[in-house]
Image (cartoon, rainbow, N blue to C red; front, side, top):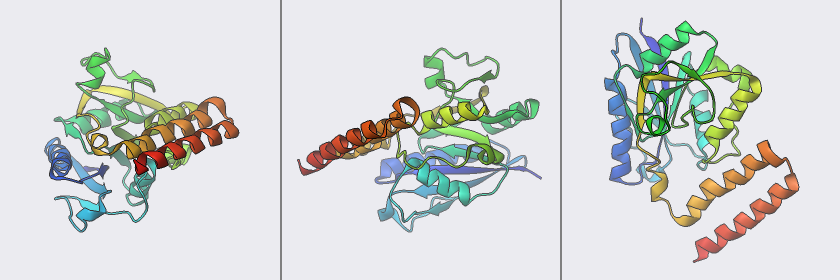
Length: 249
């Protein structure tokens, strides 16, 4: 029997280019492993409701009724899947041959490893990580938030993701949470997944960009840095005023 892995992909197919990115992610994923050995259960969470009822090939595609939130949508995907292994993905990825089996082998060799990051030939190489190096334990800098592979039982320890975070800082919050609970995460250089780089975010207007980036920054700082609710409240009120002004003009 093949090892089953739940793949949760967040998609924003607002135009043909972004739709094509999601198609490419799915296509390279399916070609990356022998289906007799590894079976991918692919759930696409599409945030562009105007595309409904379109379904990506070889997937279950769903359109949540709730407003977009990266962690919120990932939690929906986690609740709707059930296999022992789960991988949370952006829609701008290129999967290389044997990426998943390399992580499974690393986890088999180190049962304490609950979370793993594949090696991105762009990000990790540019940041000095040896593409032929050994498995490396760590959090910030080591972990790539665009492709998170984990054992499902990790959620028994850390809980589901904090839905107060809309987009930016979701990966940083995950790192801090793993560190808080002493959960082991590793970079697996033998596993290769190329992240093409926040393509969906480049298509939003300035007001939406601020909402997805600066609002999470304020919350993350409150949660993990200064812990002052009054400071957080003042920051969010200012940001909301700036967003309202930006939308008017």
